[in-house]
Amino acid sequence: MKKEINPFDYAGNILKALPKGILLTSEAEDCVNAMTIGWGTLGIEWGVPIFTAYVRTGRFTHELIERTGEFTICVPYGDKFSKEAAKTIGLCGSKSGRDVDKLAKAGVHLVEADIIRPPAIKELPLTLECRVVFSQLQTIKDISSRFKKFYPEGVDSSHVGSNEDPHVAYYGEILKAYIIED
Image 1 (cartoon, helix red, strand yellow):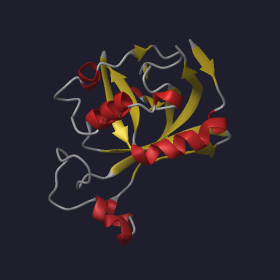
Image 2 (cartoon, helix red, strand yellow):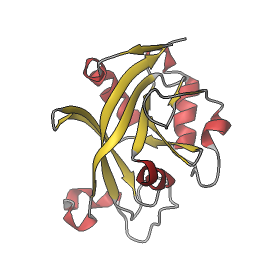
Image 3 (cartoon, one colour):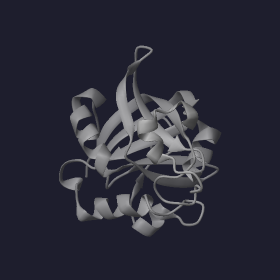
């Protein structure tokens, strides 16, 4: 069962969880992938609710979002801040979906989304269904020198964490927000 919510009523929960890691799910050609993200913004742009996710160009998730223009944000919530959720977030942030089915390995339960293709995850029940309305490559040369440490030269995209690949900012219109209840 899904309890529909206003995402801004839960902004504090989302933004508090984000630095610890939340999941972004993507799907294309029946391949579902989840990636841990620690950067994101929640706000209003063009008069609609937006979640902006930042994905490096070398990531498998980038390929999937480019194909479909959709993603789901899945956030631990309430008693779901469990060791199991932390383990899933850790796994999805340390492996590539090109090489392993991270969600199967984590043993999570996928929940069909209502509007878009990428599913929600029962174990991370606060869910935002998003469709990309704008994307922008963040060119490294234009980033403040303060933040160049996140883009070390000579560290390719197979490296977990900081590498030389720039991010694409995906502005996802939040089409639906809910909490998955047991």
